[in-house]
Image (tube, rainbow, N blue to C red):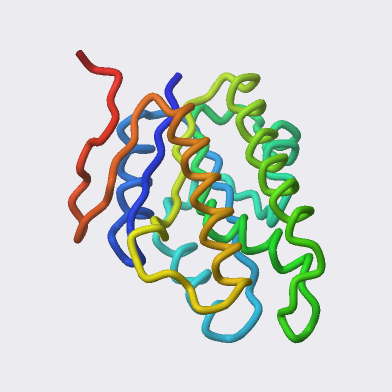
Length: 186
């Protein structure tokens, strides 16, 4: 069993590489989708992702409490893809903003993101399966202009750092090319 983190920019090939890795690892796959179809464009993106997956894979839609949901629905899966941490953090943030995107409680958001990632790590340790997690790198760009944007960037960056620390392998995706930045191979 291994834990792999794939990190990179938008459309860098993370999801496709996650699917390739899952096929290489072999065994039944549980695909955990964290996206919510909030509008027609997002609905189309979700449908596109669904069509790209092998039909025999199981799908679990979980916008939060991902670790708990996986433990309940793991079945016989030997590989779990979590796609993606970026939207998972966004979902938590969305639960704590009002309709004008003003923050309700920044400290609570940070605590909930840390708790969510901790529960996912506990799940990884308890479940007998390999995990492939997909996330975006958001720390290499400009500092966001809004307080909400900075909180999101910081929360996702912290989540990525925690997951990378726990992962056996980490790949940075650049223009469809996986670059190993952490490996258990000697």
